[in-house]
Length: 121
Image 1 (cartoon, rainbow, N blue to C red):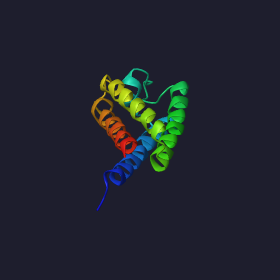
Image 2: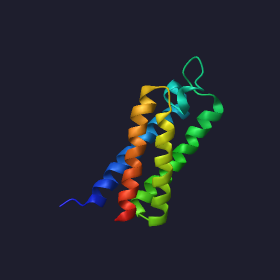
Image 3: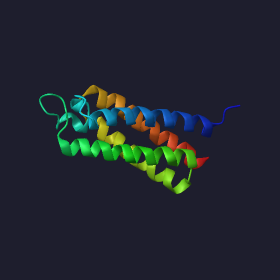
């Protein structure tokens, strides 16, 4: 029988990988800037300015910490990640691009739910 915690762990790791691929692509200069940071900072060619590419790189570090937290399950840290992902969901809903508004909002809401499930387990 699969437990809720095991399912939440697998789902969270999958969502972290998806978010990491997206942020990594932004950091490397893939022209997806309209789908991130509210769609307000993309250059005409679709890439992000250097400071936002650095921010995407730092986001990769944050996502790595989230993955570690999901695997190691320290309860207080999971609550922090749940709160951060919940707040990020609110920010994503204000994005201009449908991918950010609906796709990334769903992703961060899923991560918040997974972290909450694991914190309660």
